[in-house]
Image (tube, rainbow, N blue to C red; front, side, top):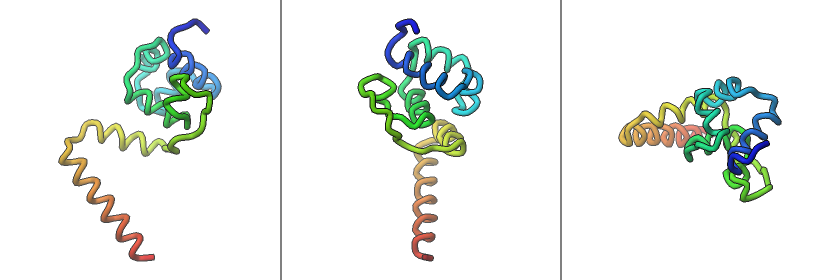
Length: 113
């Protein structure tokens, strides 16, 4: 693997370990294939690195090769990524309303137990 940058090399390794093409990965994480290619060539944003770290179940430190410990961070599913994509397009007011709704929903669930 050529030296494109630590994160780029780690991202390629993680994808190949899972037997995914760039296109298959893009469909799973809702990031277009061109962006996946850019990530693997050393051009990335924090939000894309976070999405991939969550998908792979590793820390950002692992992707950035500041740690060889690939422990899981969050266990997100496809629905979680869909929600995150919608949240990126939402205003702060919309996010606040959603947060209040989710908090109320969880409170009602806890009270009914």
